[in-house]
Amino acid sequence: MSLLTRRIALICALVALFAAFAPATAPRALAQDSMRIAAVVNEDAISVLDIRERTNLIFATTGLTDTPEVRRRIMPQVLNTLIDETLQLQEAERQGVDLEEVDLGFAYGVVENNLGLPAGQLQSFLQYNKLSQASLDRQLTAEIAWTELVRRRMRGDEVSEEDIDEEMARLEATADEPAYLLAEMFLAVDEPEREAEVEANMRRLREAVLSGASFPQLARQFSQSASAAEGGDMGWIAQSQLGEDLIPVVSSMAAGSLSEPIRVIGGYALVFVRERRSGMDVDSMDARLTMRQAVFPLGSDPAAVRQVAALIKSCEDYDGLTEGHPELLISAPITIRMGELQPHFLEVLSDLPVGTLSRPIESNQGIHLVMICERADPESQMATRAEVRATLQNQQFDLIARGYLRDLRRQAFVDVRI
Image (cartoon, rainbow, N blue to C red; front, side):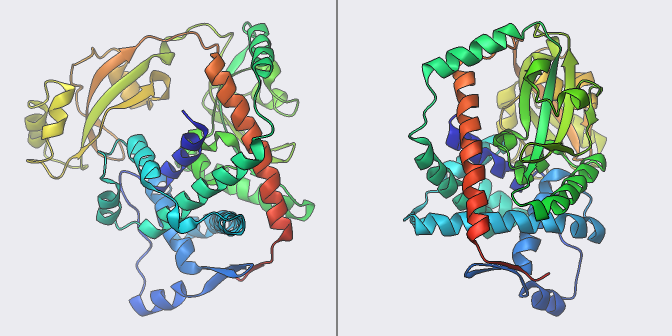
């Protein structure tokens, strides 16, 4: 996956299978409140409406419970994200990037692919669920323009073959150590006076995860590390590869547990230990499943579910279901690591033969009929040269981007009014 694709992939956090909407408010009062200015960033204003639209998109994808209290708690981090986004767009214009000419077609395709939507259906999906096209387009444009600006600064510091050789040797030397499958969120502390604010924001994110929100989706939306594009996924990491500030925390955590905010170099981290193992041996949970699903609304008639199930004999049969069953959500083929499945899906799918339809599986999103189209046996967890190159490039991108944005913040006039 290219660096640009990885960066755009985080926008998938903005859309979801089911939309959540703001609490009902009198239309006139809502309109007046929406026009209020929440912050001024140099010459540009961020409105309450901008925050509300972005927040709606976050609720739609993360699993957060949409209540006034939860909205109040996440609002500071949403506003910080919009401020950074505004600074990125302003810098792009100063550097001669024509924002009107930014082609969003490729980005739309990345979003559709990650959501399992058919090609060309993203706009219809947003309209159907009453989510803001403008908010999505603004963040896509900022991501594309910012990626170009950072890549310009990277051109004099390319990853060499010697860099890759050195990293490969280091990985091979740690193959027998305890290893952890980790995900992270990171928030930078660029100014000492903001430390308490950043720690508080990280604690809000932790509370959201513990309340049922999706860690990967929150990481895609808020994390300021290179891993954000992958939902915070750091992959398998040997114990000696962890920083000194992480080793005592991670080594004492059980699989499936979430850390407290950890003060690390540059900011605060939140670490989720997805799995543990004694070394980098092959694990059955590393099998890759390519599957499709049809999702019924919760409470659907069991007879209707059985009727549709009788029509699915192969993965290709999903394509013809929407015409006669508009209530269904039909996914395109999606590939996922077996260990990433939720427990109630894993119980059904772990031994399901390829080409066999599952029994109905109920979740918070609906009733699922799943078929495994392909199953790829697990391979060694040792990274390939291509994966090591991508990791090193992302680390460079992250380092340059963080310093670049820190400089923009320090030079900017930012007036927060709410």
